[in-house]
Length: 200
Image 1 (cartoon, rainbow, N blue to C red):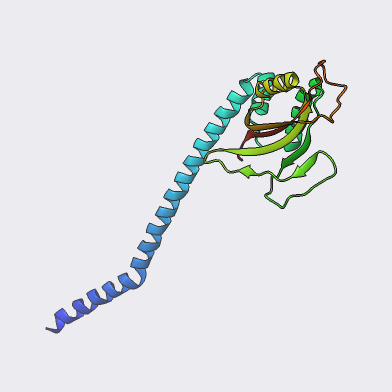
Image 2: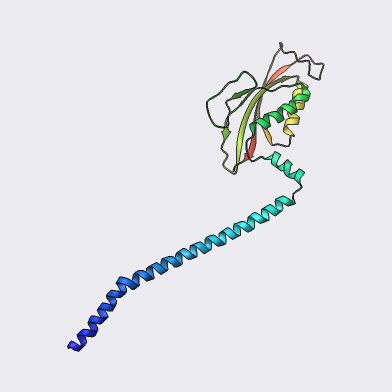
């Protein structure tokens, strides 16, 4: 009987040693294998992203620089409200129309007034996609014919601009010698427009 007890004890000791030392090692090895697998997947993904980046870079480099500049102007990657106002001012200038009471706000802060053309107060809307919407308001004065021409030029400008609303009122006290028309009727026009930009 005793000759069977010793092997049983040795077997029990071996089992105990397995659970005390070998089993944790197997668990650590399994964890390490999972970590290596995840790292390999991440490496594969990074290589795939590099390939996509290189492909997109090659396509961008293949675009004519002049056309690329037009694309950037069409849909810029930031609001750039100052440049937008300057562009609209340049469109209005040939018709003797000057932008006034410009309203915008890229940070949703309180309205800030200045004794000049710019007053903060609009908003940047969050669009449910990869682009943002920037609201801009301004007023200008001019004859009806010049207003029509300015509006057409504004809508056909390379940068995307949607006119949300226009209201106007007569102003008999306005005298503008720069207006290229003999019509004496000058009106004040209040514009609300939207333009768009790519989100980063």
